[in-house]
Structures are given as structure tokens and as C-alpha cells.
Length: 240
Length: 216
Image (cartoon, rainbow over all chains, first blue to last red; front, side, top):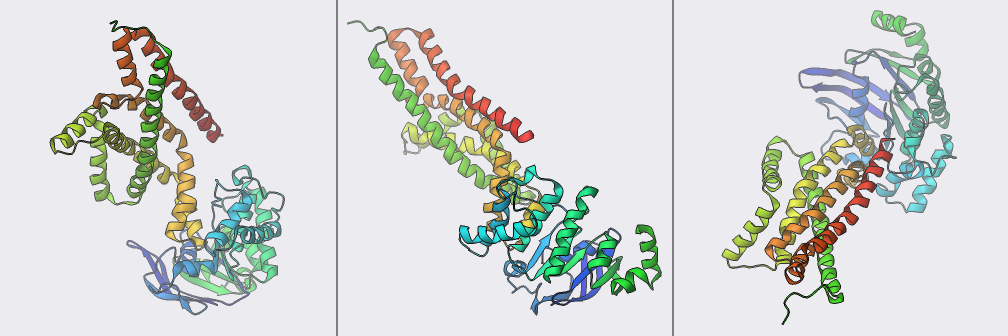
């Protein structure tokens, strides 16, 4: 379970998160929507401690993420993250990309790491690309590689930061299909997304962020079909 | 006795020693200079302004003072201090430091060229700072600057001729001795020049080829 309690985060004078409370249970899919600059992505960065926080706390399976005694590298093994940019390692093949972390972080043998990597790559539909270099692949394929690379660490939680935003429109579908696949596997996911229709389809909960606060949260039907708050209605009328 | 004898087969062995010594000191300087340059380049990429200004000033001196002056200054200095060094050792030290000064800038730009997001992605997989350096930043950054690295390495091979001034028997110095004996400067110097060309030209073509390939 991921428990976010009263989290504040500032960049200099700019307060990006102004007290966020959110709980994500195992097996749940939570989508976070909202305008750019509303703090959605920052929250993900705070969950896996890439960014520090200025107040409140975040617990992952009861472990305080921002406690200075917490081993952040150990923690990140449990929180797979995929970014807007796929960030493939250009010097490694597709297989090596996905096998690197199990090998160096978990200390698995090359064979074992590659077996795990291969399984995840096949799962996301890249089984025929194992020996290719990612720079030769499309953005959609590289993003699926990024997903497989994160999955190879066998994390119980996955964080997705606008993973389709940098893709050409015709490539969005294959990545969303991969996310649906994970949902069907029962993966716990937090998805920051601009794909409202997708959020509606896959999410157990949708949170609408506005200026560093959760303006409205509930089931997709509640938030997306029957928004109660005026700001949510305004936002949805613009994007739908 | 005839002091001026024509070139003989014996001289081939003599010249060959010179060639080997040139290769030897160049390889030492390129290896040591690259390793030190990698370290210094990394420190520069990671450091704040004040550390960088201090390091930068030191590197600027190494880069700005002509190599030949550094060589003479260093051997004179250690000689005066009462610790004369073998010309090879003294030459290696100065040539390596000189190489390091240029390599550090090459590697620094290599480290800077690795996108921060790629580092974040590596960290998000649970990799430690050092693992990220070793498996992501060094291999990706160094690949990006390989053509520049090769350029510096080539100029080091050519600059190694200057170590002759402190008495190291590399190619140019063996050639000079041969000239003073045979009085055939033209042929010998053309031969020496040709040797440098034969090493430098193919490598610089290769560097251009890699550069072109990376642009695609």
C-alpha cells in the first residue's frame, strides 16, 4: 500500500504540492489527471524519492520514503517508474537494457537476468527485437522497452508519468495496450495521464489535481462522468 | 676514419628503437592521461562553481604553456632540486599531465552529454549513484566523445616528438643523430614525417568515419 499524507513540496518559492493525501492499495489502478503544472508528475517523483519533500510523509508498505534512514535504492526496486521520455540506454541492446538492473542491482547472474528480461520483453511484445539497439526502434517500441525494463525488477508498484505524451499519435495505442495488459495482471499502478478515455477505462480511482491540491477524487464514473467541482468540469470540458 | 658514412642496415635497427620509444611514451601518456582525464572530467562535471574555477585554472595553465617549455622547466626544476629523473620518466609525467588537461575537457563534455532523464531512469531502477556512473554515464558519455578523444590522442603522438629536447631517444632524436652522422637530413626527415603521417592519417580518417556514423 502507498500512503501519501499531507505532502508539501516546493521548488524555491514555488509551492507545487500543497498538502496531498492519497492512498493506493495493492492491485489498484489510480489515474491522476489535471492541467500541466498542477503537480501531478512531481508527486510521482516524490513517491520514489527522486525529489525530496518539504512536509508530510509517504509510506510504501509502511516504509517512510523520506526518512533519512531509508535505503532509497532498495525502495526504488519496489517502485518501477516509466517516464514521458523513454530513456533507453543507447549503448545496450534491447535485451541488455532490460537485464541491466536485475544484474547490477539485484546481483543476478547474466543468464538469470537475461531470462527475466526476455520474459518481460516478450510480455510487452518485443520478443523479436531482443538483439536490436533501441535507437533503431520507434518511440512506442522504446516506451514498451522502458516498461519491460522496469518490470524486470519485479516491482509490486508501477508509476507512469505521462508515458504517451511524447509519442506520435499513431503509437499511443500500443503503449496503452501494454498498460491494459499490466492492469489485467493485477499490477498496482499510478498513472499520470492526459488520456482521459484511457483513465476512465482502466482506473479504480481518478484524482483530479488543481494547483497542487487534489480537487476531486473518486471512481471514474464520479469524477469523469459526474464531476461535482466546477474546476473539474471546466478541465474536462476543455480536454474531452 | 670517415665520420660520415651512408645509411646502413644497422641504422634500421636504430630507427626502429626510436619508433618503438615514440610509440611507448605516446601510449603511456594516452593511457595515463585518459584515466586521469576521466577522473578530472567527472569531478568537473559534478562539481560546483568554486571547485571548477580552481581546477579550471590549473588545467588552463597546463593547456596554455607550450609543452616544450613545460618539459624543459620540469627537468630543470627537478634537476635543480637534486632529483634528476630519467628522460623517459620525466617526459611521461609531463606528457601525461598535458594529455590529461585536454582529455578532462573531452570527458567532461561527454558526461554533460548524457541526458539527466536517462540518469533518473537508471536511479529509478534502484541503481546506486556509482552504478549509474559505471553502467550508464561512463559508457554513454564516452561513446559520444570518442572522435574527440581520438583527436587528442593523435596530437599526443605528434607532440611526443618534443620529448626529444630532454634527451629521450624517440624517433625524432634518433633521426637527428643519424642526420649528424650521415649528413642526409632530407631523406631521413621525410621518412620520419612519413611515419607520423602513416599513423595519424588512418586514425583520423577512422575518427571521421565514426563521427559520421554517429550522426545518422
